Length: 116
View 1 (cartoon, rainbow, N blue to C red):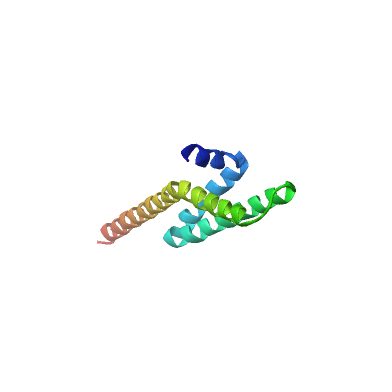
View 2: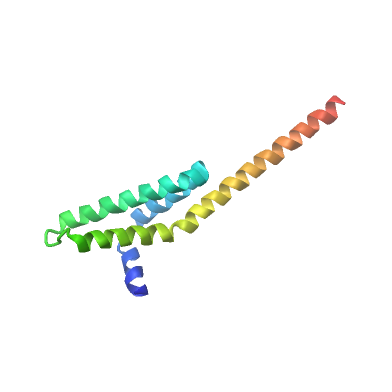
């Protein structure tokens, strides 16, 4: 089962994976917790489009219930693998916000000490 899942993950080209990672990272970095959900929905939509395009170019493939279950499984699998990427984006967002707050506080302290 694990080998099958890994093969399904490797069936997408590197460029697609870079797109998935970019969507997950940017959605969580700029959108925070609220951006994670739409980011993963967008990834699911892209996976759906890629799989439908693959089935359309290979005429011997049927788009029956088995195909649909396979697409849903790949969507869940890919989004699960990308959850740590979203966590990385959230972490980078919180570090950036923390730096901005500490810089602002230092500037405010300097203004107060210069004015007194």
